[in-house]
Image (cartoon, rainbow, N blue to C red; front, side, top):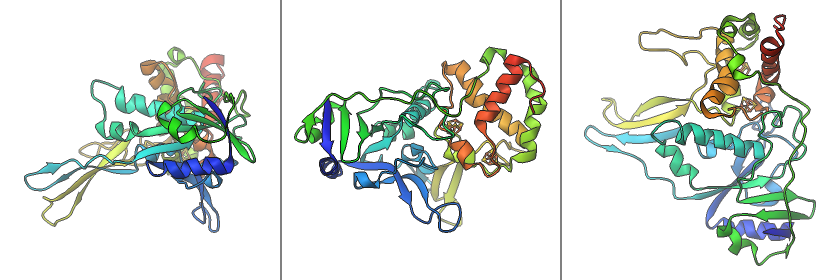
Length: 341
Ligand code: SF4
Ligand code: SF4
């Protein structure tokens, strides 16, 4: 069902939706940027259409809405364990097609990777509806078209923002009661970006042999990467976590166990009991991340993990470009160009 609504009518609808849903969107956080007196665009609760930032890319992805940075798995005492109740709020998220596809990757990891579902993820995820922001331009570092993640039909509502009105494609009939008394019926089919400025070519996974394991291409990243982990925390598809026990009491018998986001790029990520660590060098870590995003995941699930949102390129303090890294790999594997370093 398609509608054209004045912006003020859309804001009325958002107001009504707030009684039932928490509504998140890309918004400006003033003075929270990397440098003093700078802002950052991230995901937060919004009140009205004017809060939504459309002309800048978010530094962080919307993944923390369904996969929080810190999440309590259970509380414990000496003789009792209690799993926290599931949050009751239903959630609406305004996001772009690449991020919807990114969340599909998280669904695959948490819900479809083996016989058991991640119940903590599932109980948040099942409460979320997507309000897709039509995206036909992208940003400089985006390469979603190359990753085949520029389109999706998995949304409750798709929206084209114009100056004074919005066009809506409403798929979720549960929301019909909110929309049917506003605006006028008008067919609307969202369009999608057809070409990005940045493009990648991905080597065919079966052609990536063990020789790539020790290839000197990775040495550049040992020299340049400082292991800060920003590329992971900003990535919509990175899902690794570590465990943290927090004690409320000196005798360590009362407390809570949390899971907390982890990063394959930082020190100690691979440490095992006894202190043995794999992938000590940054180049080895970059190799691991790259192979996971565009090789191993594909072999297991039939599509790539990376959705080409380009956030890792945007946030890297060393200006390391993941899209360039993928293209270097392609050049080595598919074109036999061993001068790539
Ligand atoms: S690896 Fe980079 S481009 Fe790919 S999904 Fe993650 S942040 Fe986006
Ligand atoms: S953001 Fe850049 S410097 Fe930091 S870990 Fe990632 S690749 Fe390395």
